[in-house]
Image 1 (cartoon, rainbow, N blue to C red):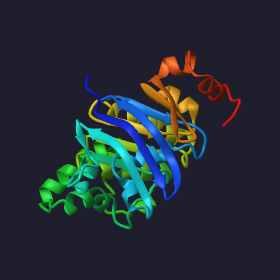
Image 2: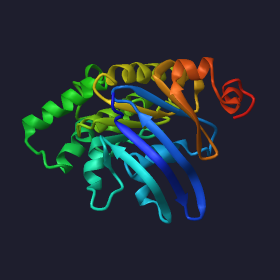
Image 3: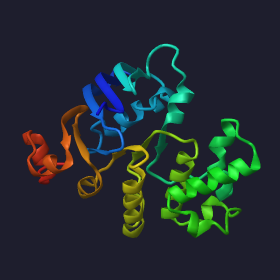
Image 4: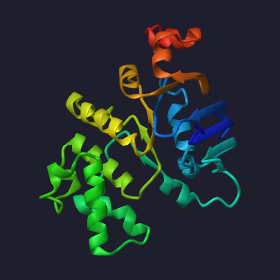
Length: 251
């Protein structure tokens, strides 16, 4: 199977500070890839290189290649809006817009030019169903997104990401601000979504990586130390630093 996303010799700098060092990684289609490591190791920075979210940071600089379906997303003339449509993102803190539940989900399609009422209703229902939120909110679509619980808000943000029909979903510690029950719902949702999407998740929670992912990468000080099938990484790590992190000797 060809990888959905490939990074090759990827370096990233915040000014003079190098945050990523020659990262080579293949992300498989319709699989969940977890990126783990201690704080400040580069995993979230790497995640944001996959849809060029780092472009908005002053003094940021990238070298190397990131290929999406074989296309270098950093090549001159690439349409960044199209890349971010194909590669959606869900952030650590739920960030609903100050709008109704309906308009939160309809926001992206409206920006992309969809304004037909019936079509928007179809997109909103489909996206809320896909995020396992429809049954909880279908009679309250006019309610503010802020009125939902934290876990519901995060699923609303996932629905908002799905509404623009991406192929890849990036999740930057999507459960770190949630209670255990909400975390379980998000993890179950990820397992359902991978049938239709490629998912990359950053997590500090090793148990979560072990539970939900098919592939795991371990980052340390800007380097990808080890990458492989999750079961193998957790049971038979090849690098002593990976073993030390998994067994709690640091991090």
